[in-house]
Amino acid sequence: MKFNNLIKGKFIRRYKRFLLDVVLENDEIVVAHTSNTGSMLSCIEDNAPVLLSKSDNPKRKTKYTWEMIFINDNWIGINTLHPNALVEKWLINNELSSIFPKYNLVKREFKFLDSRLDIYAENETEKCLIEVKNVTYRKNNQALFPDAKSTRGQKHLKTLMKAKELGYRAVMIYVIQRIDVESFAPAINIDSDYAALFEEAHKKDVEIIPVRVKVSPEKIVFDSILPFNLTPEYE
Image 1 (cartoon, rainbow, N blue to C red):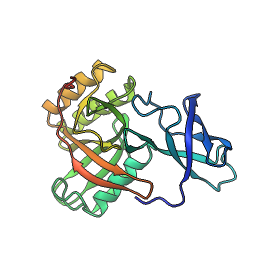
Image 2 (spheres, rainbow, N blue to C red):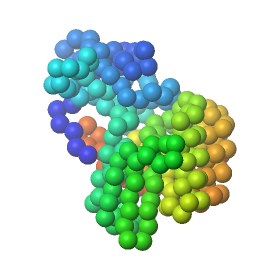
Image 3 (cartoon, rainbow, N blue to C red):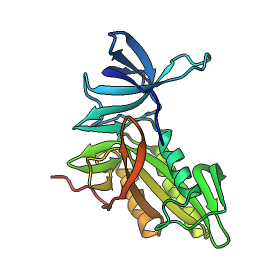
């Protein structure tokens, strides 16, 4: 995924969940939109450099979208829309061939039972349901999810367990948009119910795949598959 002409600024404040104030290099203060609805623990810092994209859509109330922030000597991807697009691209181009086979069909936003899962993929031998989560929360060099209590996330884990029982391949992909982490775990300190369901899903053979990506002002690229723990390893 490539970026073009991102706009430089510095973080001032986030408010009303979806909005933030940014001061640009010319000292103009603008309002930007963020699709990230979590608490954004460990990825907000006053006066930290940020990069925004700008929309030419006249119907948009906010022209700017928050793309990334520079903390701990690394860029952290903020836009929650990118992980789904990345995973879709990887599947279509068979770029994760060590994990997934070549699929004949890859479809976004798939209605299954009482949920809407991010991706459905199939070929002659398997039908695969995939949920994708954006991860930015870091604690002691470990990526954690969620960063706020997530009843929706809990529901997705339950749905994937049902899918597995019905004969589907069921996969949870956590796209970690920061390079300064070495492993992944559920954030039991934030949502103990999610952590319990995460462990149950793993035991029932729902596949857990934490993918670390490298975020830069030019692009987001696949970096590596990280190991995961059923509970966080805090120092």
